[in-house]
Amino acid sequence: MYSWFECKITYDRTGDDGLIKTVKETYLVDAQSFTEAEARITLEMKPFISGDFTVANIRRIKVGEMFDSQDANADRWYRSKVNFISLDEDKGVEKRIASTMFIKAADMEGALRNLLEGMKTTLADYEIASISETSILDVYEYAPIDEADVRDDD
Image (cartoon, rainbow, N blue to C red; front, side, top):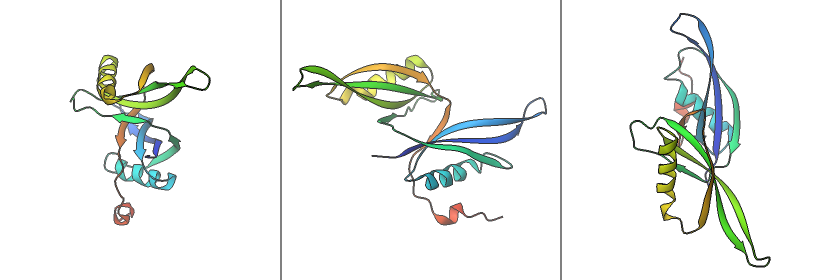
């Protein structure tokens, strides 16, 4: 199972009106440790942010499945809670096991469509408990880091 980390960064950006504004952004990083998650998000953000930025927070999150989209308009990430339904044979009652899934889509309808498409191959009974838009701007899947990439050549 992969380890996913939600990384929040902060930096100052000059707005259209010329005023400097502090910006907070959230990203998902697939990494093996907190240290690697910080190194990966720093490496990924360097080309896009001029000046200093801070990794303000990193937290581990459980992700059952990621459903990416090839649609060019899909620019948002949605979080879905899916309950898998099983039968507890000893007690004779239904048991629900929650799983968090992330879906990339252009809108809520697209998120539901992409989730249903991704769940077509599952054999288990399930119910979609919720779908909500997240503040996640991008997802960086696992890739080994070369130490030369992390070193600051300044």
